[in-house]
Length: 438
Figure 1 (cartoon, rainbow, N blue to C red):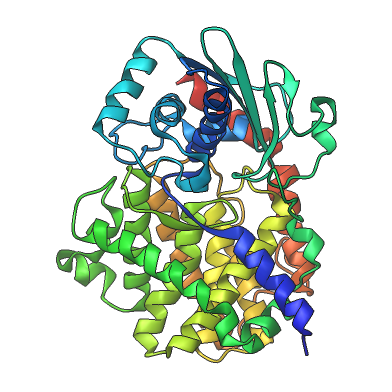
Figure 2: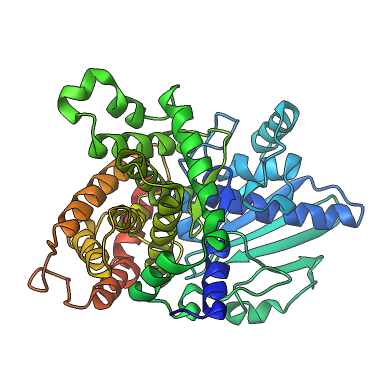
């Protein structure tokens, strides 16, 4: 039985890793860093006129081709420019929430005039952003590291406000005023997550239901309109029912990819993110929501299944890091497979089977940046999640004789993480080289 302190600790992790985000989190993290630097200047009475941003390779990769909400443009340059014209760091990853036509026109002018510079930082860190804003006579700098909304360093005119730059590599990956533990510091495992999801007081975890509300709203927007590649809308179309059918598999693929269509093309509705990714939040959430509808599950059953889904994804992501060469939908759809199993009353063994089946299936799907095509990968991940859950509920699990699978699900998870975080490093660099040279 989990203690009250242990329950509260896991809830803290959930609240740290499940947050609203407007637009793709990589450009929004850039916007957040720029907005904070601009605010530092304005607090001293100086107006920023240009910005230089240095980002890690993975931030660059995930920010090159994704739509910025409400603008009809893609990329980090316009995200940084908008942060100067209308960004508010107090909004976190919804930093551009106050965007309007005037801010957009001013931001476009800044980009056209060459006032926004984006460079590749000299760092091995996966998630790193340094944003330097300049007035005519002064400058301010903010650095984000490890988490998309963690500003770990600030300076004005080269003078530190809250830390020593030479100690940045060793600093806490927390927010300015409150350090944040890493996911691994919570010492979770699949069994603990399952027990928590089954037994935590419902009133303490019902906040997770907001992820269903926000992400389903995105899906509805895309199913009723035209966004991105229209993957979800096409799969949902009655004209293709003879191919895809109309059951759980078809609906989960359509609804989840539709939300991704909307988000990747710059829809102005926020997503509820998971582990710093809106697409992961969508993929963790919506297959479970659709399955709950199909199964006639109660509100409490849905909340507990969503809790399990979110936590499994957060847990596995903790071994990989926020950004890697492995597509995040592999991890997120593993979470949703577990959530679907729980909705049908699945045991801890069956949840473990679902994880094993997922790792044995789509491990190796690469991340080649945030873009419209992410909706296709999400649809594939969700399809695998439903397959894995159905097999697990029939007590069918891939065995240790297959590839990277171990008898112990915890070891299989670590094998997956080793491949994604270390084994695919060369792949990650090659992907970025190809994208930059196109």
